[in-house]
Length: 182
Image 1 (cartoon, rainbow, N blue to C red):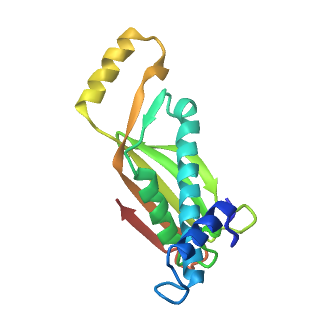
Image 2: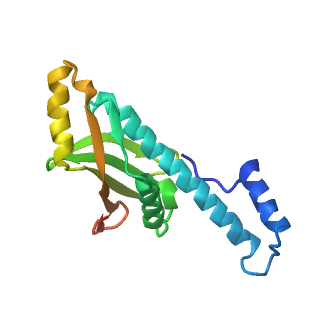
């Protein structure tokens, strides 16, 4: 993903709708701030898509399951936290490399590595750790389904609403690390 200052025509239409709906520059927000809000929302949605694509690709190749159930708004919350953590960085989100992992029974499994902008030398790393939901009924369901189906790809993985983000600055002499448990 490359962060640029341009807006799509779809986003520009929403700005003109706001102007037609009684918004006047200088009232509550100036137009540049509105553009930044629209840009941030677009960037957030792109991050959500990248995370969902990562989970989708990893489903059969690395996780060995047919379905991954993601709690509502989980990827949205993660994307917002990633944007917040990147806001203080010299290159912003463009300088981010994200390692995506899944923790299953206290073991971390690497799913993917996301480079936000390959043309920028990374200034920080984020390690995202999804967590598996620990419900007893899902374990029983998987036990019964294994008996009926010979393929291990019938299993459904349910993610917890909790996750961990670890930020490591790559340009700092002391290698500052920030750990957030959400």
